[in-house]
Image (tube, rainbow, N blue to C red):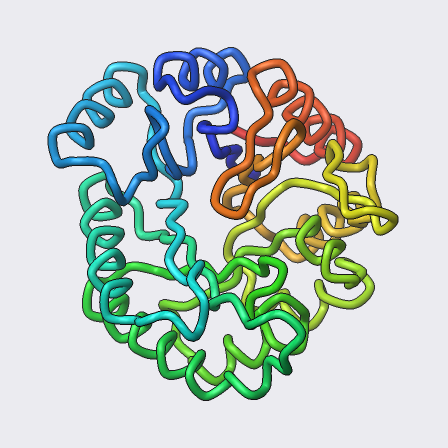
Length: 275
């Protein structure tokens, strides 16, 4: 059995609307990226308390902090970002999750990522050290145009910064947008490191995002292999069906429900139960 969760800020900026939609789909977790048009790391202590109170009233929990940590240029100063990371750790502790989603820094356009490898690893190792001390788990997402956007460089990160506190969040659509076949070229090498899965699909032709199973992301094959391997973690809906930006996507409640239905159909086809 797997557990469904999702980026509820793709439903609405309003927390009540987020929770209404999630509960209509039987989803009891959310991946917390933002609310009230603010990123989770920019919320005040009072706003975090307000969120927690509403979640507790609805019986909804946080699967991960969907932070933007690592979504800066590798040439940008790192120290201010460390302060944001400490805020992410605080949020994870406050909401009772061990997971924090991270990235591996934007590489300057048309430049060789290998030029920046040492600095990427230095920064990530610093984040991992803090994560180990705080007993939280970092989930590296294979976002396009960051250092770890393809299979080889994701593996480089996960092996060079080897730690039980750094794991992979596997995102099929992002691989498609980088020209990687998710099942054929990424799943096998990365499976030992995968601890979390983002559910969205995309087309090789133009990179546009689709409902899971309707694109080139080989989502049915990935799901079948995950089931066979005994995966029992989270599957997080990140549909991006209406808009996809650098720091946030949007779908709206109807398209979010369509995306949820697409995933549930794929799971049903595999006789794979969820909660």
